[in-house]
Structure formats: structure tokens, C-alpha cells
Image (tube, rainbow, N blue to C red; front, top):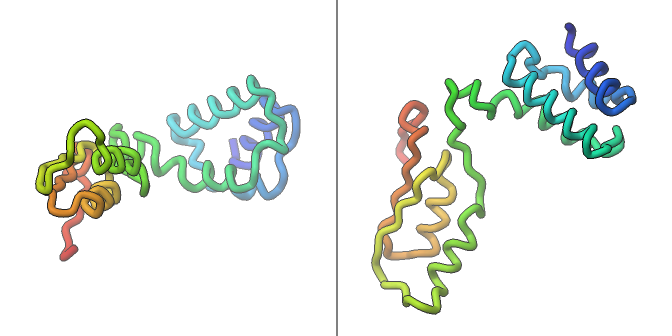
Length: 152
């Protein structure tokens, strides 16, 4: 089924309406031939129907994210692995707790291992900024197959 027809059918079946041309365009590159992508998108639309979403509740930005990012982050694109992707600020509250822990004062030097740090290891670097003088190690079991070495 061509992409446009697939998108129109999803909107019609689950939301009872036609998608805007902008949503159709944003979803144009969605690789619906991949079973994992199709299953994820269909589940998303089923849940939207159960939540009584209308087409107005689905923004163009959401369509763009689904259309361009989804297929790259599902485990099917990573040989079945969960992709080692991280975001800034994910450990902020943990870092703040370690620095301000009222029960055990933070030693000037210590060791912290950030397991599942993701790539790039943004959270590990942020923790190193907060815990100066500490030895901070970032490790992620998904990284060895995808690690790129450079001077940084």
C-alpha cells in the first residue's frame, strides 16, 4: 500500500477523519514495509483512538517526529538492541542529590559508574562537571558495536 494511502487509512480508521496534507507529507518517508515500524504506528493510533484523540490533537511536529525519527530509534534499526541514545539533563536530580546528600557528606574524591550512559555520553559528562575530582566512568553494553573513537 503506498505511503499516502496507508496514512489516510490510519487517520480514517482510528481518528475518523482525513489527515492534513502537511501530516501526509511529514509521514511520507515512514518505512511502513518494516513490521516493527508498522506495529508501533498502528499501536500509537489505536491508543489515540482509545484516548479519544481528534486530528487536532496530532500536531505536524508529532507527525514529523514519527515520520523521520521513529524508524531510526526502534530496536529493529539496531539489530534488535535498544539504541544507546541519551538526552541532556537525565541525571540532574541524581547529581544534585549526591552533592547535597544530608546523610552522608560527599567525599572530595570518589568513583561513579554511569551504567547505560548512552551515546553520546552526555549524562556522564554532566555528572563529571558536578562531581569535580571524582573518577566518572560511562559504560553502555550497546556501545561496543557502534562506538566511534576520536581525539575527544
